[in-house]
Length: 161
Image (tube, rainbow, N blue to C red; front, top):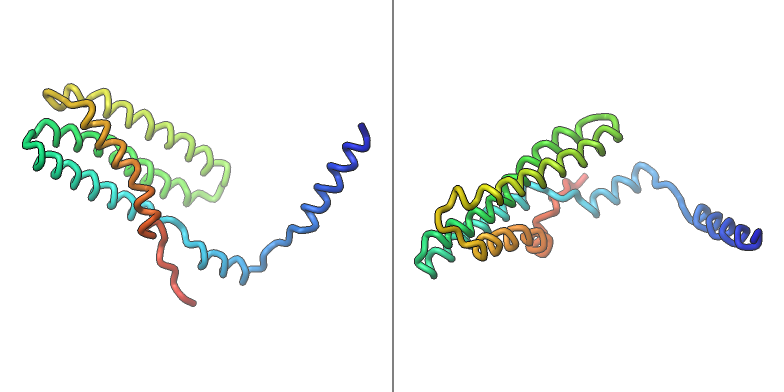
């Protein structure tokens, strides 16, 4: 059994010897090559896609109830995301990493509860609701993250030094 432990220790030592902390200049270069995602760009693309999908649905179907259902699905994604982004932008200014991490979990829970509440209110808000159209609007709007990544919208333009 001690032979197994010796093997694990040598692997850990190899991994630790390969780790080299970055200098300040290397860290700055890494940050420029890997810019932070811009949540406002993603949110704006979600609003655009959700609104466009609702307009196209209404235009092609000629039914307001379908367009309203698609729009409500998009709203059930966008409003909780806006609340989440706004809260996290304030939360990340805190100096204590533990507090910021706890805030992340709390605001993610708030986002989920708000999303569920919006979905539960949908039948009362829209007469003759189409659940299929609502789910389509919800899913398409949520999957905009993939479109934003493909377009490069999730990257903030880094300033050259």
